Every structure is written in structure tokens, then in C-alpha cells.
Amino acid sequence: MAKRRLIVSLLYRDGVIVQSRRFSHTNVVGSMKIAIEFFNVWEADEIAILNVARQDDNFDLFVQDIHEVSKSSFLPLSVGGWVTDRDRVKMLFDNGADKVVVNTRLFDDPDFARAIASQYGNQALVAAIDARLENGRHMVYVDRGRRPVGLEAAHWARKVELLGAGEILLTSIDQDGQKNGYDLELMRQVSEAVDIPVIAFGGIQDFTNMADCLETTRIDAVAAGNVFHYFEQSTRKAKNALLARGVDTRVPNNYFKY
Amino acid sequence: MIGIVNYGLGNLSSVRNALEFLKREAEFVTRPEDLDRAEALVLPGVGHFVAGMENLLRGGLAQALYREVVDRGKPILGICLGMQLMCASSAEAPGVDGLGWFDLSFELLKSRDLRTPNIGWNDVSATGDSRLLAGLKTPTFYFVHSYYADGLGSGVSSYIDADVKVAASLERGNMFATQFHPEKSQQDGLKVLSNFLEIVDHG
Image (cartoon, rainbow over the protein chains, first blue to last red):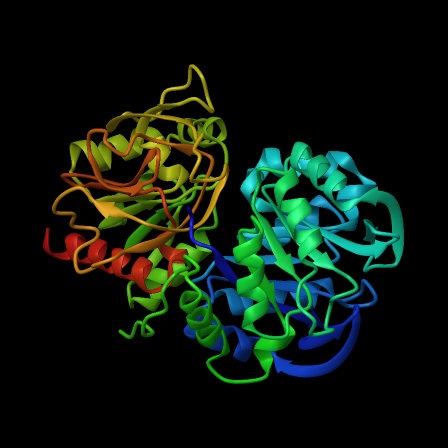
């Protein structure tokens, strides 16, 4: 009954926003500051910024950029990518993040989730789960889609819920950037396996995919990255498309001017 | 100057950013004696009830808050955990007393309509004439919480009308509080903060 959320996901690498396809990076879109201001104005419900750098050598720059953009964002801000230890978690929260998104580290160190949840609360931790379809089963991969861990997505989702995650950011590696829509079966399985909110990510071509996902699964929020960069007022148009399909989501109104 | 109480919990910068966007000077206040300089206070907070009360008591802040808010009538706005601490108690912290300014207790949210934690945007309904929600016809705010107070309880000025009524805002005299995050609720949230500033300026 909380409204379904539309989350803009910005993929960040070394100071700029990029697009991705099957976890490879394609175009550079532009500066993060501009992107944040656009999406804040155009009625996204939340913003997620994910550091998808190939190497872990620019975390300080990332934190600085997060700090800067958080000043003009009056929407919830989730931040992730290369969150490898508690110091980094603290740096992100101290610099404007409302939630941290963690992937690989949750698998490699089960205590990590408990530590974050007990210090900052469950709602502050988003568990990112990436899955690939193999022989009819959705198998989890960590480390930017490179390392299989031998677990099915729904199983791992239940585990991270027990470990203390407040939400799950669920991505189909196969669908990422393919413009064929979400992997609805994956979304359905995971959203029905847990009680915490699940955010669907990866693959949308148009707003019909988003509406389909919300209508046919228990997914709580839909996230997209690539598609929003193509045209103006994109998030507002997405919202209007969802509302036209009868989805209960926050109604965009005019930007508040003082 | 609006004093944002810094007791070690919560994303204070977001609150300051929002107040500064509304062209209002805001400072973090950490020591009890600094609360005196503020014309009004904001008590933010994200995290655990136990840690919250411990930090307020340890720093002498709880006493200073009583002095400023109860004795001197300074306006205060509690946000999220801040709201919970202003109340009597929470099931998250058995045996621990809150500040007790509102006679409400918090329970773990168990609802068919809402997930736990309740993360996301909810419409709220005002119970009567709410000063915080003045000018908002169909307010929608961003919530992030696992514990809730009864939306029909005393001092509640708005609530989420689900199968369980969840208190969204509290108002009494100079005391105000929101379960939702106005600094994260875009236009409607900024309006709530603006209304609070209006109350600070004009009573």
C-alpha cells in the first residue's frame, strides 16, 4: 500500500555517469550533478547512484561527488559500489547517503550485514543481487557479474533478509541494457520469497515493461538507468505512463519554487 | 538560527540542506549549552531507540531539551527516530523511557497493506486542523521505519490510513514531530518544513 516507487539509477564511473549493457559499459552520459538536478525536478521517487568502476581506486572521489550532489537532492539517496568495509559505509552515510547498497561483501562476510543493520538500522541496507539464467534457474553472481556463488536468487534473497537487509535491489544480468524488459520470472520469484521490499532493475525498454512488472508481480519499486537518459522529462513521462495503467504511485506535480 | 540536535544518529546534513534551501540558517548543536542559542530545534534521527536515548542522556542533551522545550516553550520538530524519542516508549527498547512528551508507545509494524520496514511514499490523512500540513491537499511523504505509533492516539495530527493506522505526524503546543522524512519528501516535505518555520516565526 506504500506507493510503488520509480527509482532512477545512475551508474557512476570515475566522475561521470555511464550506461551499461550486460554489465559492460557503453556511453558516457555526462556529469552527475546535472543528472541529479534533472531527476529531482522531474519527479523520480528515489535516486540510486552505483559506482561501477572496474578498479577500486577512486572511492574518495566518489564520496566527494556524492557529498556534492546530496546537497541538491530532496529525495532519498541510495549509494553503492565497492562498499567493502565499515569505514566506507560510514563515509557514505556521513556524506549524504540515506541507504547503502552492498553486493559482494554481503556474500563474502555474513557479519557485515549484521554490523550495518545493527548500527544504522535494517532500512539503511540494500542488498544488491545480480542473477543470470542458467538451465532454467536464476543463479547469483557477485563481483560485478563475474563470480558465481552457486546459489539461486530466491534462496540468497531469503538469506540476506535474515542477515538484516531492509531491501533488495534485484538485477537480471542477461536483461541489462538489452531493452527487452525485466526478467519477470526472476522478479516474481524473489518478491514472493521475502517480506522486505524488492526493487526490480535491469533491461527496460519502455514504460510498458515497468507497468507489466508492477501489475504481475509483487515488486515494490522499479529502477532503470539507461532509458532515462534518452529524453527530457523522462521520469515524469514514466510516472504518467504508470498512472495511466492504474499503478498506485506518487503523482508528479510542479517543481516547488521558493 | 535553527538548531539541529546532533546526538550521533541520523543524516543531519539532509535536514540542514533542506532548511538552507528554504533560506534559513541552520547549525548542528551538540552541547547542551548550544541549544540555548537556537530559536527552534530539530531532533532528527535514524537508528535504534536504545542508542538514541543513551546518546541524549549521556550528553546531557535530554535535560537541555526539557529545559528548552518544556520549560521555555521553544518550538521543536522531531523527525523519524526523533519523533519516537519524544514519546513514551518503544517495543524496540523494552524498559527504556523516551522523553515522554507525547503519551504514545511504538510497536513493530505488522500490516497486510504495508511491508516491514515500511519504505516508500504514503498518502497521509490529517485528523483535524494540522499546522504542519497546512496548505497540502493530498500530502504524500517518504517513510522509512519498522516501528509505529497508533494513528488514532493522542497528539496525532495525521496518519497513514492502512489496515493499521500509522501515526504520521504529532502536534501539541510548541511540539511537532513527523514519522516521515520531510527533507526527503520533495515538495510536500519542503512545505512541511516551511510550515514549521512559519510557526517558529509567528507562533
